[in-house]
Image (cartoon, rainbow, N blue to C red; front, side, top):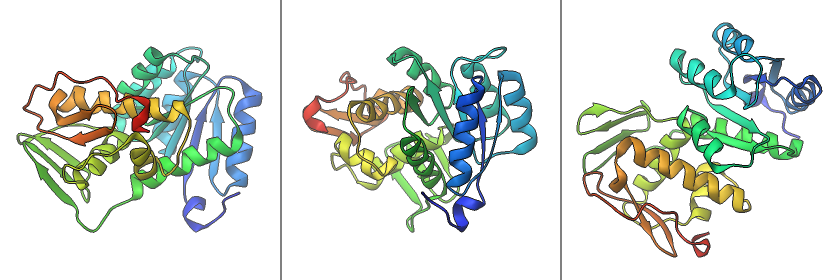
Length: 244
């Protein structure tokens, strides 16, 4: 269990229609030192998020009223808030839609309370982490970790907090190849099973979609490296399992 001054200042909104699950999540978060509350439908989630301005939203995918995807899109319009999406659908397509709507990570039900708290801590840590060297320039990409701003050829590009952290990790490596395990440790601060590797791959696709296929190179059998966003990299498939 985690309980310290930093977590005590963090507020988490849980949007989950199954009341027992929502209450269990809130109870676990409170025991871990967070302030937490729950609502049970999509519209209430959007409205409460605007009032509460939480530090993170835990969002179920299947909700009455507005779907989790719609809720994620609506709350990201108001302000950039980290989102941990919960899904009972172990489908890459469903995960990709959630990530494209602005979710930062996801958990497939059923999950353990310990893993939930670990994911919450990892997402919040990524958002608050600001290294000493703040600005990185590679090709047409400029990334400033102090202002959390990304530009491509002078035009600002909106990345989710996790996409930003992933791109920053690759840019800090100055072209060195990073395995999926490297990226899980650097960005998510944990190692995990195949679902963790798929999370990396999904976020890489999101970064490429916004900055161009060539912005991240796939090094087959090894991992990923920062590339030239103006280069048309036809190799956009994830690396093989040996990369992790």
